[in-house]
Image (cartoon, rainbow over all chains, first blue to last red; front, side, top):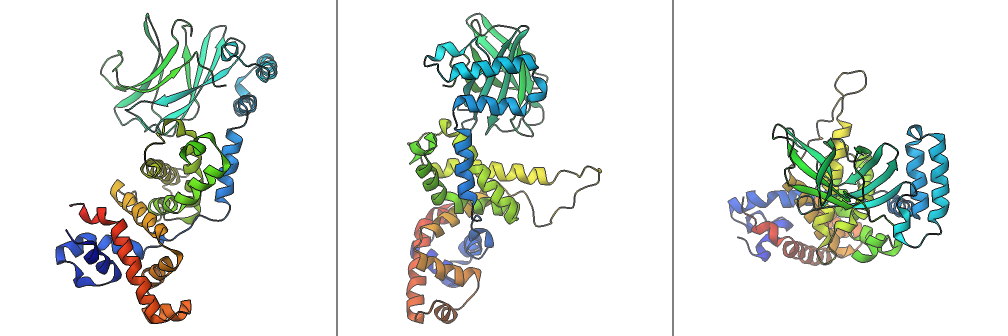
Amino acid sequence: MPTEEQFGAFLEGEDDALAADEARRLEYVRALLGDDVAWEKPPEGVEDAVVRDIRTAAAPHVASLETQRAKRESRWSARFVGAVAAVAAVLALVVAVGVLRGVGGYTVDIAGTELAPLAAGVVTVQETGSGVSIELDVDGLEPAAEGFYYQAWMKGDTGAVTVGTFHAREGGDDIVLWSGVDIDTYPTLTVTIQEEGAGSASSGQVVMIADLRNPTP
Amino acid sequence: MAVGFRRGDEDAVRAVYRRHAGAVMTVAMSVLRNRELAAEAVQQTFFKAWKASSSYDPGREIAPWLYQIARRVAIDIYRKERRPTQSGHEQEVDVGVTEPGIEQSWEAWEVRSALDELSEEERDVVRLSHFEGLTHEEIGRRLGVPVGTVKSRSHRAHRRLAHLLRHLAEVAI
């Protein structure tokens, strides 16, 4: 292994500073110093755009719900839109987190486990007359490999009920799930990685988890 | 800084951006080889990092975590750009755009991070020497400094790079 002095001399251009095999092994480092990828700067304005994006996304919960509603407008009935507007007005005055449930749609955070440490996102929960609509927007979740898929579960003391499957091979936005069981009895949402053909039972390999009783303030 | 970033504090966001945007751009460029797409990747990376910041442990180094996000974002953009056009025929693909192994982009990140640690004077000498291929005399004329000063800065810069990148020299094939 070269000393730092030898390595430094090699990087500076002294080819004989290293033994031939070391020079071949480390030539890529010197080459990177001359590659434009090592020197390109992000264009002006990207920094401000990042700050703007974050500021918009971090806006109060009411504004966030309204933004999501605008994106999925075609799926909501006019009557429900009115109900959400009323909920938005109530949310602005509510302090206790527990009051948010049962009034309309709400969001909870979902986090990755050790199996998917970079995964994180938001779950939008909407209790309706025929079940519970659960929509995931996640980032950092690796696309399921061929032969595998993700499965979401509602879990409680009495067991687990599947609420849908997805693969996330083109991103983790707008994953729509549906539950026929209630949140009070099955309050935990989990996502497992499953193998095709391995049966319908949970693999037990939980990659994401959320508490559906804990709305985002 | 990490805690402020997670909260979306503007000063902290800008501090994290200014510290790591160069390296993120390097990873994006190494994957995409296109400045506009790489800029898009940089913007998405920092936003996604903020969105995922609840899963980040502020007690750990932010760079490896940020690198993983940058690489994933760049590859996602690369794959989207490679999709066939709507008419069904294969989209023309720039022969320079290849999907790199994880080690290539990580080492590019490390080199860029090391370059960003140099002083501006040292970095200028390295860039003019390696990227523009100038001799010490030519660098001295460009910067308006004596050639002895160029040599001194070059020596110092490359020894500092060797120190910052010593872990790359330690990795066996």
